[in-house]
Image (tube, rainbow, N blue to C red; front, side, top):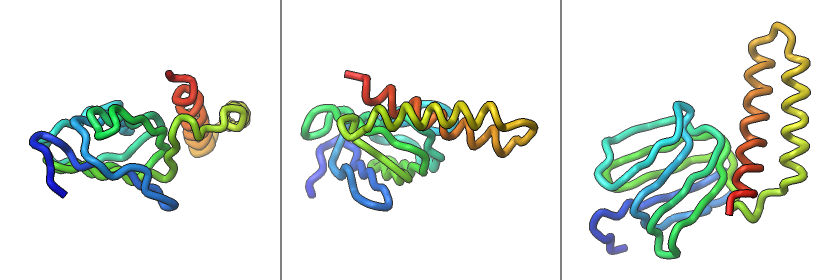
Length: 139
């Protein structure tokens, strides 16, 4: 495949499917340390994904957005590979189900007591649900 100058080759995959494999001008994504943007020529990087939206700018079809939940991203100067445990297009998100997930996370939070692991799990469930709801409601 011929590559345009200053274009990243971007691949977004989950254990079940490949959602995206094209070029883009830039990629915004949620890392565990906060949101980041990757442009052509970025220094090599391996980061852990959080829950939130991956936005691909300047793709052959315009801008594209996917909601991801956890995983890893590998950044090389000319390519980005996103390995997500789960990823959905905003129109694939079941908002009532995400709301139930949020309610469940809040209940886990209330029941966590002194357990750090229980609080971590509650935060993971809450973050994932909130990211899905936000992604589905974003125009």
